[in-house]
Length: 193
Image (cartoon, rainbow, N blue to C red; front, side, top):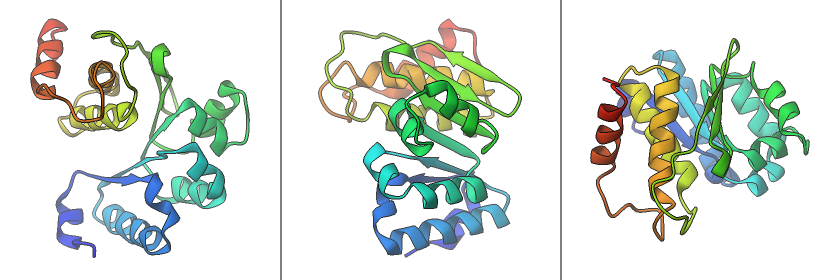
């Protein structure tokens, strides 16, 4: 049940990898990505789960190579995708696949890769670690918020890191505070428009 008009109007089509198990969802992903590309929209994918990556490695690689502009993955997901235990090897393999690859590294922050650059984003610690559920998703949400606002990818990565740094200080993936307020305070403190 794709709403083609929404896909055509959206700045970014965001796909969640955990839905890839369902054949009809897989077909919907590909159809939606094709429509987004035909309308010159950005396609983003979150790998979502290393077990899902293990089950569908080749079809994920095909999706990434043919349709994805922005890839979100954590360290275990990207290593699983390229069947390696070495993060540097995985990063080298993914860097030319998408316009941007955002690889989250937990307490070590994240790395943003383009064909020309590798940008390190520090983690933001906004309190004691309670629960990491939803941290990758909220990182992607923060990153894409900045991206759709026209910020450069370093600033997008910082916003993602702030969002993730906040969500891990509470139990569960739904924030009890306004992320807009938290991000706005961060942007003001760092003189980012």
